[in-house]
Length: 122
Image 1: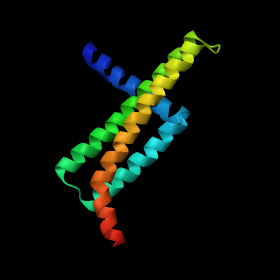
Image 2: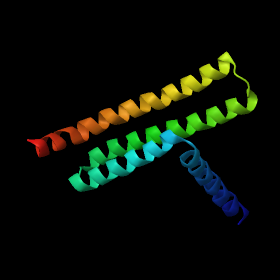
Image 3: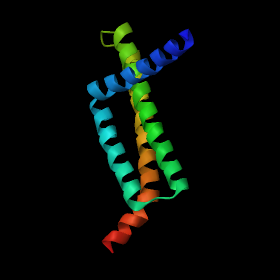
């Protein structure tokens, strides 16, 4: 019984982390909007199971990178409240990870949705 409470608390803590990130990070809110648009497009176009897999992996990659970036930035701010070159580098590297994830997700979106959107235009 105690392990169930512990497990539920772990899920609640994780949810709090996601909520904190969305509430405090502008880019997370942008990712949330993009996620909603991409899921709506996926449903609207009736994409295949393989395409759903690629889309969901791309979404998961971006969100994982964004959450880890927020965690790294928070820890860096805690241990180095003053400006420091290594603190800046840590934050820049973490942000770079988010950028790479977002570019990969954009590429996946272009592969999945590009031909469909092009077909609507022509």
